Length: 134
Ligand SMILES: [Zn+2]
Image 1 (cartoon, rainbow, N blue to C red):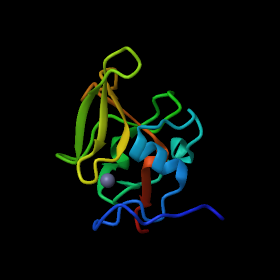
Image 2 (cartoon, rainbow, N blue to C red):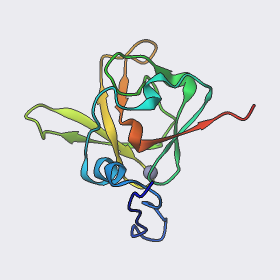
Image 3 (cartoon, rainbow, N blue to C red):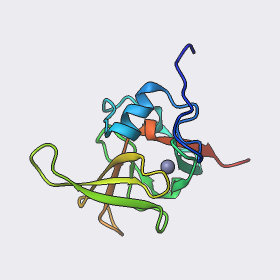
């Protein structure tokens, strides 16, 4: 409602319909406030797509409650993410971004549950949940 929208991200159309806060995360490596995303409590079956370009990244079966305050996943669809090393806060973290539009999503930590032992800690605003059709 009343939020500025922009369509300036090139031929793929990324950025269409994004709020300024979403753009801050996806394009400027922002982080949303912990516990602020309604997706923390999302338990329905469905798919999680990149809010920047609509590319499907995670499935609801990969989601778990990490207690971190951000939507967390222990696995991701093959080949859909890129990673870079992030030293921005004086510690090495693995940053994850959409392999398609390169939008920043969150970080990857090695303290997740089995079977992968991975925790993809993702900003809810960087995701678009698509509930499974009934
Ligand atoms: Zn994307």
